Image 1 (tube, rainbow, N blue to C red):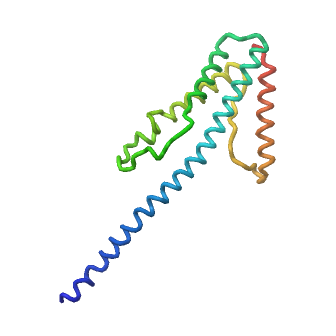
Image 2 (tube, rainbow, N blue to C red; image 1 turned 90 degrees about the vertical axis):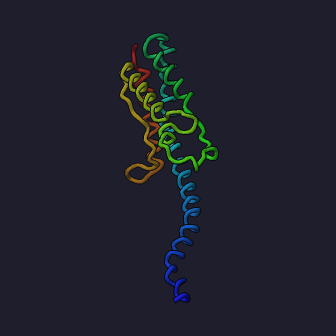
Image 3 (tube, rainbow, N blue to C red; image 1 turned 120 degrees about the horizontal axis):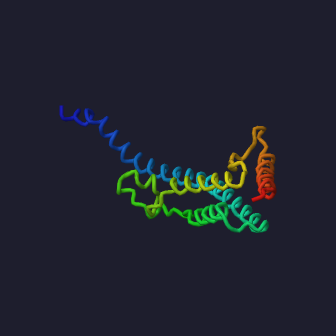
Length: 175
């Protein structure tokens, strides 16, 4: 029977060998896929923040040209610009300790204790407040890459035209 003992444990040996080879491989691929997803998500996020910041700059300039440099709208525009400038621009994932475990706090607050979701929510709220104050319809630029017909150039032209139309509406505001 001693010669067959190794056969009885054969399944467990293959299982342990598979775990030893697959775990580091899966961790490495998870890291690569996570970074790729984060990079793609950051482009979409920064497109929205850039749109809001750009509209705030345009509206602030229009209000300055009209001579209405004080008031709630300008104060909210200044807050939007400050929030956009304070938004974190880097995330050094190499400094994160993967052995520390998944506490959930890192998912919500990111590295450095900054609550990105709350900061983005505040920025969106301020944008909607300014739109209501100025009488403009809040529109968010959506990063889809293509329109419904599959034309990336048409989608880009449509997004640019929408931003120009919003700026023209803002220019016609009398505050």
